[in-house]
Amino acid sequence: MTIEQDRDAYIPGFAYYGDNILLLKATLEQIVRRTREMSSIRLLSLGVGHRFVVKGLLDSLGDRLSRHVIIEGSAEIIDLFNQEMAPPAKLELVQSFFEDFHTDERFDVIEMGFILEHVEDPGLVLQRFKSFLAPGGRMMIAVPNAFSLHRLIGQRAGLMDDLHSLSEADRALGHRRYFDPAQLDALISAAGLDIIGRAGLMLKPFTTGQMDSLQLSDKVREAMDQIGFDLPDICNGLFVEARPCR
Image (tube, rainbow, N blue to C red; front, side, top):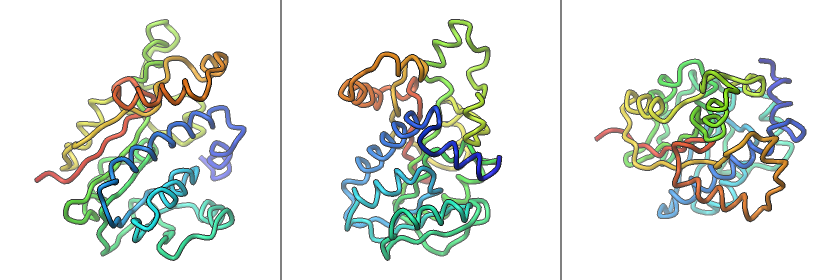
């Protein structure tokens, strides 16, 4: 996948741009909810992506965010981020592939929202970044769910054979895989992490085109997303909070 293809899939006009923003909005809400009790946060983020979560964390965490390091493999995406905003002094953008990144710093929170479906070896990434957690630190992980309600309905209706199959849109986004809940749990456990919380991201019963045709109000969509937090197994995305095994 070229940088140009990746960029096109992450800007308005891409067919599933709205879905992506809804997923990221729900991810941001979960991270903010789960860090409310923390008075000072050293945060490590994997990837800039749509920049929605990064900007949201800067706004929502405010002065509680004492240090924020973001790892991004694309110099072009880093340049785009720097053009859109002037990063505060506490934010550092590091150009590096995740597999090559190393630091002596330790972080209270490491967030990897919709990253593991892109990388060649997600277990390696989890193992590597677990070592960068401070004592008591936590990982916040989000991935696309193979068992999303709309995919389950599609399979039952005979519209798809394999719940883990990738669409052209997935490939445009650089996805290598879907996760189902059991697969994600097994991957996290194998990396020496305990799951201490989970949530569903974006309750989506129908395809994007079908959802759009319903012309649901923002209040209804927001209500669906709030309900989805308690239904992780069938939401469009899976969110997991984990810490190293004790």
